Image (cartoon, rainbow, N blue to C red; front, side):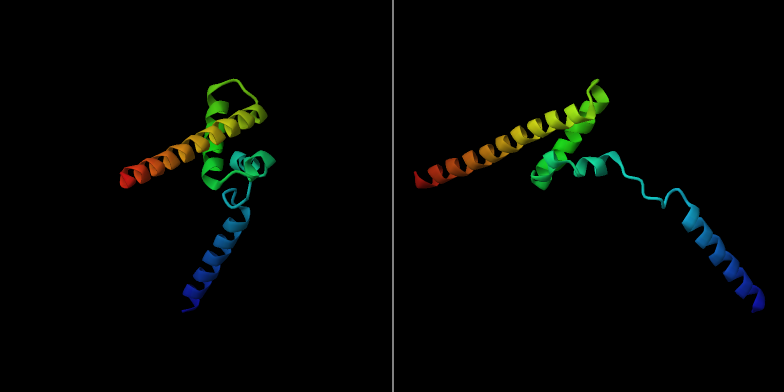
Length: 102
């Protein structure tokens, strides 16, 4: 019984040491975290914000553009996308209401 207790203590010590010194557990801000703090993205809806972040990442990867310019361009693209989606859904609703009235 004494041996198993020392084994458990050793294992606990190992896990504690690993948890405090592991690079996995150290919180490092990512590009996405940095983007979330930008004022350009704060007022967007969650769906539009996600779309803008995806577009910005693609712009940074594929073109030689600064992150600031990529985010500005991505916000404009995402806002246009959102307006088109809303307009399309409103148009479909209006059309279905017109069809019901006929």
